[in-house]
Amino acid sequence: MKSVVILISGRGSNMRSIVEAGVPARICAVISNRPDAAGLDYAREHGIPTAVVDHTAFADRAAFDAALSAEIDRHAPDLVVLAGFMRILTPEFVDRYRARMINIHPSLLPAFTGLHTHRRAIEAGCKVAGVTVHFVTGELDGGPIIAQTAVPVLPHDSEATLAARVLAQEHVLYPDVVRWFATGRLSLRDGRAVLADDDTPAGGALRVPGADV
Ligand code: GRF
Image (cartoon, rainbow, N blue to C red; front, top):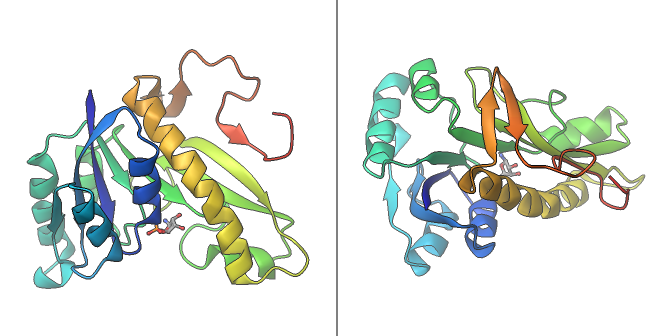
């Protein structure tokens, strides 16, 4: 069975969705850069080993990343899952986990990298928002896209109502992607995410709830 380390910084609802989906993988640790991340409590309550690598305790990004990768590597994971992990990573760190580190971002990338994605989508007048899961590369919220779910932006949406609609889809999509990796179907080939043995028209990796794809 493949092993997974999940990195969080806060609430940890995506981490929780992966745990609760019962993906066929061993969640060997949940690691946070913030000691007060609420998601740590959930992991502890569910018997998952936790660790904190507090970024404020390190002189610079490189020192933090070195300590973080030492903690990750203790578990020798097949996959590193970033689930609301709010740190920019050094190129060395990213290289170390190339093709085995994934991230979830609450927009339809490459639109709206960075923060405040929902507010920016509403301000831009977008009619469609969504969520993206991608392999992590050195580019912030860049990297080969694995799967996306489109979510409508409704006329009276606030940042909060849109965020909630997108988050509900994050909790469906991320466990599915982790399952694909865990079962050996997902890989990175020539810079593109490849999903093997897929017989759905859109490759299983495009979701438009309510549409027949
Ligand atoms: C999610 O919206 C995720 O897409 C983004 O950060 C948020 C984390 O939420 N990267 P949670 O901690 O998983 O609840």
